[in-house]
Length: 212
Ligand code: GRF
Image (tube, rainbow, N blue to C red):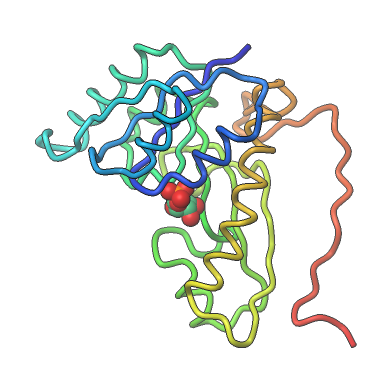
């Protein structure tokens, strides 16, 4: 059974959805760069080991990433899940974990990399928004895509209401992606593309605002 480490920075709702999902893996630790991350307390209630590597204790990104990698490697994970982990990682760190590092991003990548995705989607007036699970590569929010969920943007949406609709789907697709990876049904191939096996790809179109 694969071993998984989850990295968080705050609330931890994606982490909690993974802990609830009865995944075919062993979640061996939750690590945060902030001691006050609420998700750490949640992880403890599930009996999961927690650790804090405070980024503020390190002079630069490279030395923080070395300390973070040391903590991660103590658990010898097969998969490292970024679940609201709000630190930009160095290329060296990302390459060390090639094919093992997974992220969720609250937009339909490649649209809206970076922060404030819901505000920017509303500003642009898009009618469909969503979330993406992808393998992490050195460029922020640009790695090979594993799964996406699309949601309609409603005429009276605020950033908060849109964020809530997207978050609901984040919790569904992240568990699905990690399940596939743990079962070796999805992996990053030598060419750097997502390879898949053994599952149907039905999918339904989403039209927003919808047809009469
Ligand atoms: C999520 O929207 C995730 O996509 C983004 O940060 C948020 C974290 O939320 N990267 P939570 O900590 O999982 O509740």
